[in-house]
Image (cartoon, rainbow, N blue to C red):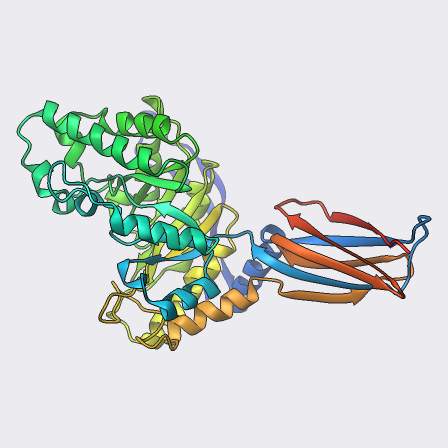
Length: 422
C-alpha cells in the first residue's frame, strides 16, 4: 500500500524560532490497484492522443461504412539501451536491438579515456562504427560523456598534468575534437557526469570550470541538448550529495553563472526501488520545466532475475507515466562474455531473461500497432493511439485513399479529413 502526505495548514517559523507547527496532517492510502490505475490514466493523457478521421466523397458528402486501417510506423517516446563494441559484426545482436529500440547510448566508447588513451593519440574508430550502426537503425544517440568528474575514470595523463593551464588546454582540446567530429550526430551530451559527487575539474580549474564546459559545448554543437547526469537522485533518499534539492541547487548555481540548462539526467541504478520516492523526486525536478531522462536504468544483480524483472517493471511504468520524463535508456549493454554491468535482458543466444520479457511486454503495451474500423453514421471513425508516426488507408467500394500523419503531444483531438476520389 502506498501513502500520500496531506498537510492542511502550516504555521511558518519566525526568524527567532526553529520549529514548524503542522496543525493537521494525514496520510492518504492508495492500494496498488489505485496506484496502477493512476499511472494508466496519466499514460492515456500524456503518451496517447485521440484521433478522429472524417471521410467524405468527392462532393464533400459523408461516407458511412468506409473501412479505415491505421498502422504505426514509429514511436515518439525514446526508449533505448546502452550498447558497446560487442554489437559490431554481431548480426543476431543487431537484429535483436533494432526490433526493440529507437535510442542508444555508448557504454564506454565515447568517454575520454577511450577516445584519447594517451595525449594526442585520438582513436574514434569504435565510436564511429557504433554511430553508423545507430543511424542505420533509425535510432537517436545520446552522447555519454564529455567529462567525468570522478578521478577514477579520468585519463591517466590528464591526472598527471601539473598546471591549470595545461589542464585547461587539454579540456578545450577534448571539447573541440569530440564535438567538431560529431556535430549534429548526438541528440544529447552529458557534459559533466556525476558532478554532484565528484569535482576533479572544478577542484583544479575553479568553480567556473563547468560553466565554461557548457558554454563551449553549446558553441561547438548548438543543436545538441546539454545534460548533467548523476546517480542516487531517484534511487535512494539518504545520499545528501544527490538529493533532488542538491540537484536543483547545483542547477541554479550554474544558471546564475550564465549556463542555459536543457536537460536533467538521472542514472537510475536501483537496488530495491521506492516508487513513491521516485515519483516525488520526478515531481520536484519537473517543476524546473526541463526534459528529464532516466539515462542508465538497471536493477542490482544482488537480486535474483525474477525480482530484478519485477522491480524493473515498476521503475519503467513510473517513468513512462510521468509527464516530465522525455526518454528512458536501459544500461544493458552485453559484453563478449554475455554479461552486463548489473542486468541483462537476454542470454548469449538472445533468448529473453525475465527482465527482457518485461521490456518486450511493455513495448507491446506502449505502441499502437494497428487500428481497424469503419466510419459511423456521421462519416467519422475515432480512436486513441500512442504518439508517433502513422500510415492511414481508407477504402469504400471502388474508392481508396492513403496518407500519413503524426501524433505529437497535445490535449486536443487530432482531426484528419480524407476525401475519396472516384
